[in-house]
Length: 160
Image 1 (cartoon, rainbow, N blue to C red):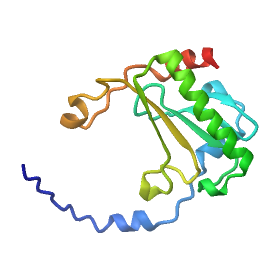
Image 2 (tube, rainbow, N blue to C red):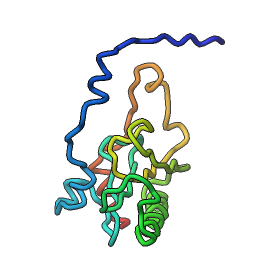
Image 3 (cartoon, rainbow, N blue to C red):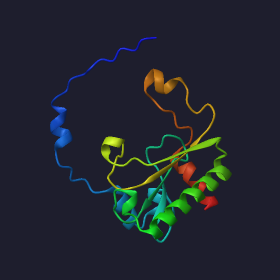
Image 4 (cartoon, one colour):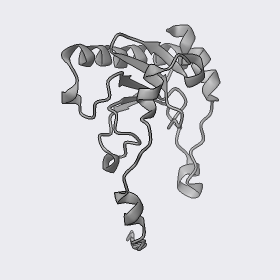
C-alpha cells in the first residue's frame, strides 16, 4: 500500500503563527477562580488541581495542573512534583472505580508545536476502553464522546 501525501501551501498562515498572542492562560484563571463546579475542577491540593478536560479525547479525560504558571517539568518544585504525581495516581484509582476503563493514556504536551493548547504545564489522564475508537475519526474526522461532561463530573466528584 502506497500513501501519497499532498502539500497544501498556505503561506499566509505564517502571519498568524508568528503573531504575538495576548490570551489569558485558562489554567491560571481556573486556579484563581471560586467556580469549581462550573469549571469542572474535581479536586484542589496545596500546589495543583485536577480538572476535567473541556475538549476531551474520551469521557473522564482529566488534567492535573500546578497553580503556578510554569512550562517545563523541571520548573516545578519537589513538592509540586510530588503532589502532581500523587494526583495522577489518585486520578487513575478514581477513574478505575468510577468508569471501569480497560487502560489509560497519561501524557504531557510541552509547547504548542508538541500539541499543547496552552503554555502552562499540565498532565493528561485519559481513560481508554476496548472499542473506544471506531470508523468515525477515520471517515468523518469526528470523535464521539459517549458521556456528557456534567455527568462525568458528577460521577467522578462522588469518588473524590
